[in-house]
Length: 277
Length: 293
Image (cartoon, each protein chain N blue to C red):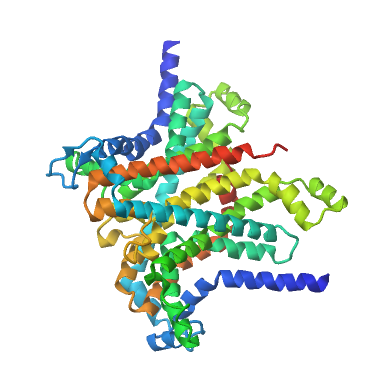
């Protein structure tokens, strides 16, 4: 029995390693020069040379792209969490026809694929830019604005479901004590929403950080590129120099892996909770 | 009383309006005018006239060979990928919920690909299917099997299925794990006491009790596979010869590459109808099969 268990354990380890083999291939080849890469793709590098990383970092303008991605993700999250929880709380507590209609609209639009909205959205943004002088295209702020809109359906839905399970008695007591709606919400309700807030954060981070199509349509100047944009651009230019391309890919997955290892517990919980709701 | 009502309405607006306003601008208005655009013929240039063509765009769809081929490929891709992802995800979930020592590390490893976005995953595999397979084939002398899959129209589709499966199986595993962990221990213990073996427990107890997870997983995989774009773009770019151009990419190309804004939008509306139809139909079918505890 013991022997059987350890054999199974070894097999499982093999399964895990095979599953992540593509990542291994990318990382080892990022260190090799051209000749070495073609000699044996699977082998470990003979010398650890970081020159391709340095070059890729420079060509991708990695620091800038990373900062852009970080700004866009954090700002979008901040607005999504605050505005959507406020909205969901009010919709759940004032349960009248209008609230139900607004809520159903949020939920129903979750089915709409992005491809159905992308072209008309660009027309709307163009209208803002040309007729009203508000530049929402090619600015990080404009991108954040779009994410607030696109994130609303799922986030309001998740918050709404959770608010209904929070007892109303405490809120009523606070209202009688003379608290305004705003302070009732931020002092009493919002802290109680913490579990669902984590879920909303995790789901939105995964989506916004990796999103390619929306930023590719809205941002066009080089200085505004997020990580997926700069990767796509870099990869398009260097498909012949595979070792350099691999170094670039390794760079882009490092932040994701660090984030994953640090917040693993929350990520897995958040993904599971988000899907089940 | 009246001022109280006004005050209540003001609070309501303060909480609901900010996100509702952004949502209306970003989602509702584009959705509504998008339906409008689908009845016009337009090349996307503001100075050019939009010509009203009624339902012509929708009629044209059915004689568009490239579009029909793309829709067919999307169906084949979705069908195979959904089955593979769910099968693999369920197996992973059963392994990871067993009492083995390595289960937590394994779960961490299997879930990882999901976090690396579709675009990056496509690039990673582009190297493996292209250069990787080619060099392996040349080294061991089997170029008939190991060659650049991405230049062959059938193998390129297989490659896309493999990458999609690799990305989503770990994600689906997480949902199945939640389902399996929700089965009360005493039910499983009772089964063991009654002498039920591994397969019996799996087929007659575990699977029926995780039907709600099936509903969710099928919904997620169905809609994600149907809407695949990023991986498609970075792995094959729709090639060779549009053989792997999926539904979403066909719409993108029609609008932004061929500049048929009105016609492309009609495709996009049809896309919504198809996605909604398949996913809602699936949910209503699997919902009926859920067992109450």
